[in-house]
Length: 217
Image (cartoon, rainbow, N blue to C red; front, side):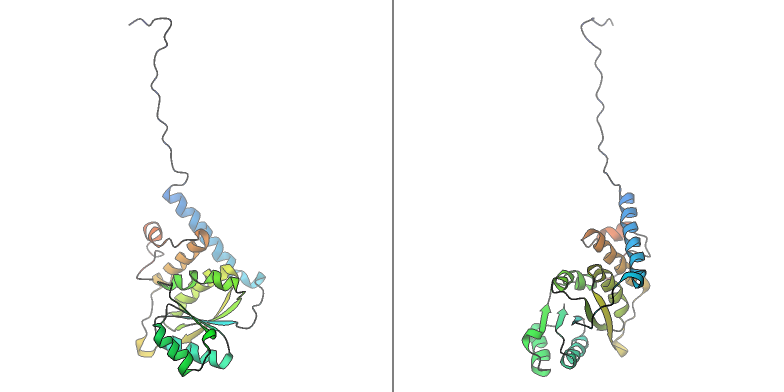
């Protein structure tokens, strides 16, 4: 068919497909690299981390009233303020700290924002930083301490807060936690430091099985 000289043959326009800046694999690699860098920074802290002051407060993680009882004893002996994250009901806590142990109400803060071990720290860490806390005693059960200390040292450490563990014996009630659960929550904590969000669902879908979060956190 002849084409008239005044018209040009039509060309079909190709639609440009916009590709995401980062594919899931690229995002996973980026976040893992950030987590790895944070890990190296933490492991090398002995070279650059300033010595912390004496303990300034007691942070007790809820889940067993024996933890709160130990924290109440410590607070009475050392005169330190106490923050209970996700602990027992307010009625019991007020009785334990104020009536049984005789602590003034301003020495004890009850906080119920936490849903799991990670949020025990993420819900409070910026409040502690604003209060200029640099050293806290961490009180939790002995079977929970490894995971809590790993998560806490990543999250609180990112804000310059040092944690000293105070393990509460759990005896026959101990339920040892597996390495996958411990390191899975450690990965979540590192991702929170990098992104500012809890990426548990994303981590379960994209991280290797041995590193993905397990259980209820």
